[in-house]
Length: 273
Ligand code: GLU
Image 1 (cartoon, rainbow, N blue to C red):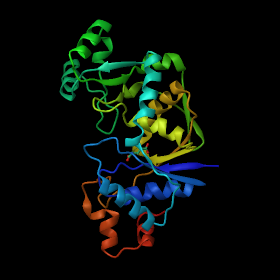
Image 2: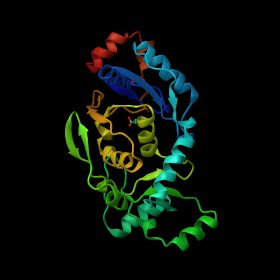
Image 3: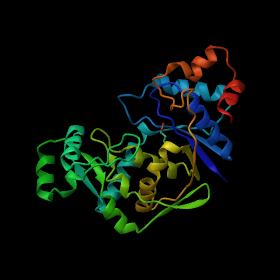
């Protein structure tokens, strides 16, 4: 049985790109789940969650209840984080965004993980245990990062299945990602991996902009001893100028299109699913 999911962040109204992602997941699965990725408390809104339910129902989708909400799963993320820290593959990172930008500028190059994500230059990886303890004791805020090289030394080389074809899962180019933010015992990567396993998702369908996130997520699955889902990254729906839809563009939200008199059939025709 193929279990798929749609996992929106409730930080805006759904647009045509989301409709494509949701319908793609729905059509690919025997069982279709919905997960609300609301760990970003400053940007997530209850009204957007209600709007997600409404828009998806309007499109004709249905899903298994209860809907998983990440903001209610912090204990599960803490447990995964503990498991990783016991394996010695994590470290506290005290850097601010400005520190990271400065360090990259100083080193004279700007490695890029794609999609504007700067690769972390590893500044805090080298701190001694004493310095770490002193800074934590002094109350400095810190995130937790995954030491990717140490982690790979434990797991060995990994692969993942993309549309049934094996691909190398090399997370090294993405650097030491954050697995717990300064204000949260988790991050996007950790939550997705823990939740896909908890929901028994067997096929992850999502936009190709997240293909670059898959190697490190595969690494986390291997470290945590979680099952390995298959992947099918899909094309992105572009606007008429060939750009990715943005949550800031309110003219193409499903709500706006519905209010304009468009039908679910019009939406499907527009995005060709
Ligand atoms: N929550 C993510 C987003 O809205 C999707 C996560 C995923 O599919 O892995 O882009």
